[in-house]
Length: 326
Image 1 (cartoon, helix red, strand yellow):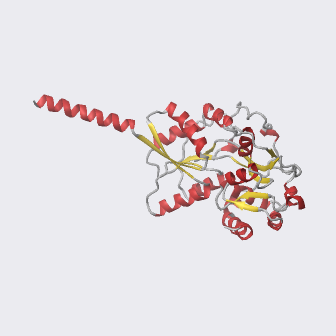
Image 2 (cartoon, rainbow, N blue to C red):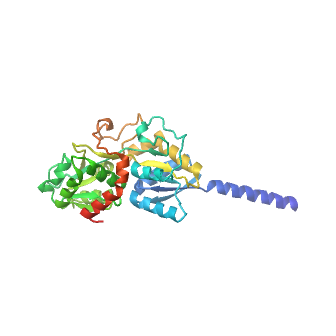
Image 3 (cartoon, rainbow, N blue to C red):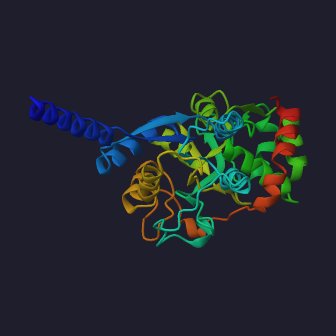
């Protein structure tokens, strides 16, 4: 009887250990669209079927607010952050909230696309330009300043930096550029441009013909075009603003090994090829951009000092809200 009880206890222990192994979890906070993240996690789980991923998806600003509230309460949940821009990641790094990952597989990535201390890593190149409705009867734009013309009055929609990380980078970069500054956004508001929460709202308004022009990240426009909507995308002659959707592990992560596995996956060639299929510019050397996209090496990039963008974040949001509403 004692042998039987011991055997049963051993089997139970093995069963519990196996169950624990099968129930590894990873909590990811991301601003990447839900439908795309479903594809990402499907591919990730082909490599790591034993890791269950819990996802929270929202705009970068809302994610940052949620994380800060959890930290203040002493209950941070996220293991991994996959958000729109490196400025938000730099803020987390400055607060000593990110875990360095020295062994991250960065071969084939330009050093400018990841933090020199290896606390966060770019996963794709995303540009902001102009989406336009080709059935609107209005002229195709070629310049940011075309959105200020009389024919564009009431026909422009843009995402809000109060919600979107990409929008925060775009507005902050243009506001810091002497060729534009806040005068440009004053003029947009005077021309009856309207703001919506995120890039998805811009896409939908232009695709439905409610607005002729939208300031938006490129892949959403190309994705909508591929689905048959009468839309196209323009890289304005003055240049585009960019983000690289960095990924990072939080110092408070409870599932560090699983988080490192997710970083490894995000930087893998397979994940970069998947990004291209999702209409993103890749960052890994040797991976071609989506069909119909220009060579990223030939893009004219509008840039700003990340530290200045970070310091000016709250002012950017305040001024934008004053012009376009909160």
